[in-house]
Image (cartoon, rainbow, N blue to C red; front, side, top):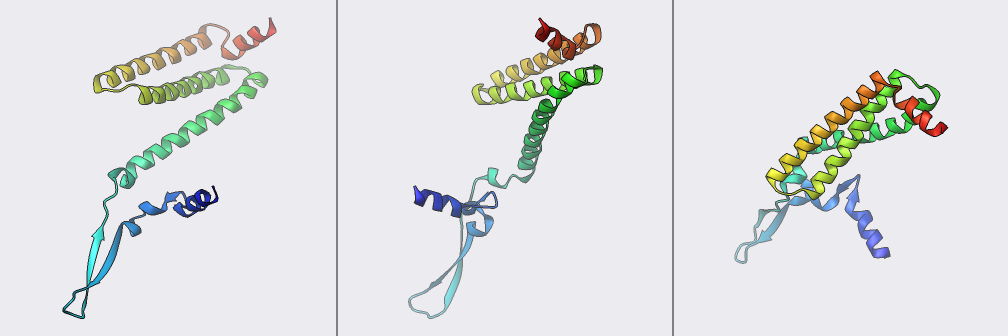
Length: 158
């Protein structure tokens, strides 16, 4: 177990894999020919996968991940805000944050479990329809009824 921990501490340096760093993927190799005393510099190149070098994709994924964390923390903050300051601003903020959080969560489930191009397109279309109807329904409820904050308070009071 100590060897595994030690190897893992060597493999990760600043969050990046040590073995996939570009400086380690292209190394010069010095060889000598038998009949000559001069050494020749040869370059050996190991080709890593293209996903390791996709800078713009990883940046977009990183921003998406950060956005998901912000929405999660916002939902945690909206709970006490809805209790202490119920009103239309908190109601609509809850409607947007809950819909976005649910959309991203179900989207990840679809990414993991739906395979095949036509099935993925149909699942994504259904997800967008579901998210749109959810947000519209919550906004309709906030505008024409008591709102999310008061509705939860009424459920707790009985």
